[in-house]
Length: 411
Ligand code: HEM
Image 1 (cartoon, helix red, strand yellow):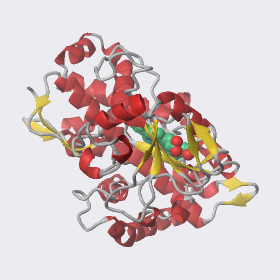
Image 2 (cartoon, helix red, strand yellow):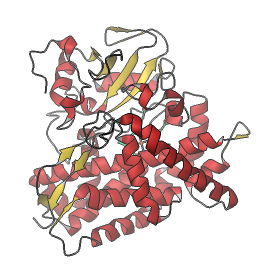
Image 3 (tube, helix red, strand yellow):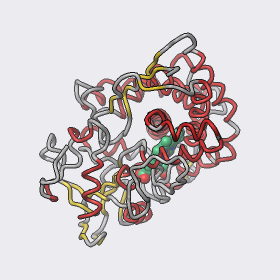
Image 4 (cartoon, helix red, strand yellow):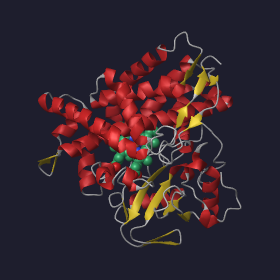
């Protein structure tokens, strides 16, 4: 962790050494108070990379998110890390890496299936999956909440949406985790390049097989939606289908898992807050929002300036990278009183799903439902669960997740 005597313009917020115990909240706090739109040096390990603008307050992230004509998702990719590990043309195959009009047309294909009402129809199924996974803990004293609980639940939920056979869940979980944590040296010791060389071809091959099966036999799953999709009278190319599939799988796999685990950890760290939920489970949806505020699954998304602009008194130049840091905006003291306090009654209007612009999260209703059901079922089954060892964070600046959360199930 960098100490306060480091000059402001040398704060290297993206260096992963500062993320080993979660996001560098002290650095973000300093930026918010002294320079909320901060020119941050690039990651030390990639000296060829120029720096980027760090956007650290809720108001400025709101501005950037809603102005896609100035802040493009397409030009330079969506991540702060160097594009060579996840090439921009690959990212551009997913609608998260596109600007309007193509983005809007592709997203519209899915939106009907992701409305709160349509998603609510899946509650019984998600609850049954959650209970089945928790049943497997019968007779055990301890477990790892990441691997034994969160992963199998989120894998089966998104697997059912995409039409994946349950016996393939573990393989897809491995592939998706490798991709999304490509830059984490603990999870990918061979380095991020290996993921593109080794895992991406396997993902594409498996996906092509599934696409061929759906062309032959359409079903009601989201892979079939992609296969059938037409934009401006034209079918998607196979590459666009593969990329659409990867986007949904990645978003569905790691995101909910991350916030569930961090939220459960917070409840174990704050028994008074857990007591409130045990006494009144109707507070659980509010606890979900508080967990999203404090522990957003994604630490950042990036834009690239398509023209010169002014933001927070800074001159943004065309071509500059602009990085929105959600762990910082969730602690913005101009919006939240005592922002580091975990308070399940707070009802925050956080930005963990984005700030309402074109790219606002498609899966919001699904994520909220999954998180609510997972927390409800876990608390009902294991109300006295306690930590049983040191949780470990991913050493990554994109996915903001615990990689291990050892717990004692009955306290
Ligand atoms: C706690 C869970 C989740 C969080 C915190 C989250 C967060 C986000 C954020 C911040 C964005 C905006 C990206 C940007 O502005 O560039 C986003 C986009 C997206 N999310 Fe989620 N997400 C979650 C769960 C899900 C789930 C379960 C799905 C669906 C399977 C999903 C699908 C998507 C898609 C498709 C986009 C791209 C939307 C677009 O570009 O228009 N997300 N998500």
